[in-house]
Length: 239
Image 1: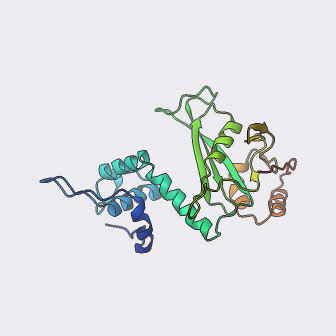
Image 2: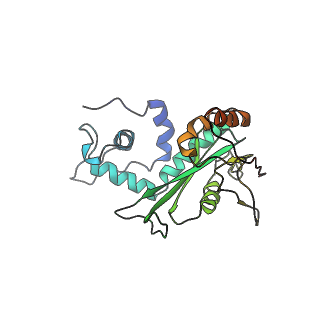
Image 3: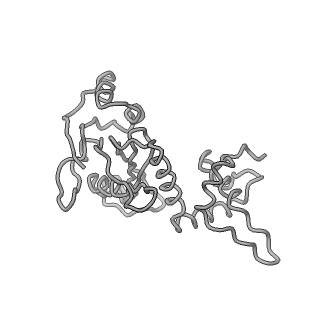
């Protein structure tokens, strides 16, 4: 049975202009599934984590949804939607540029993926940057052999929040919080330390949620201490 829609009419009005125009189906063939129905099917798979073949009846076919997912990725549609909505949030002053959090992880790729010289074998490193409220503002995928600091540099370079009207996208937070081994960034033409304002323990990924919601630097430090962890060196970076 068809589930409750993921996309409200209000949200769909904002997404529609960002999707490719609807194309008529081939004469004599089946009508082309409209974008909204396909997007609902894509979101069902992404929200549930189920295989495409398990897409319930009432949605377009799994093949149709998967093909359009890939096509829109190749056309940059998803990135444009994401950045457009980030711009809308920033216009309403809902993004926190005072501090960004950056962290990443490794995913093995037993059936393919980026070639890697890392000891972990073939796989992919991914890194995400969020604003002070935990809203994702940038991400990057790279070979597992890529150095953490290089991955951090590229991820921060991917921060591009559009402004209303002319002008370059916003891309510079006041400070960045990252793990201890991410201790340098490129500013201008120089490569100088450091991007972290605090060196955190290596188990940061398991503790990222309370850190993202902290209201101040003192809250972050107190949260670490209350869990029996010792904060590292205090390090600052100007952007």
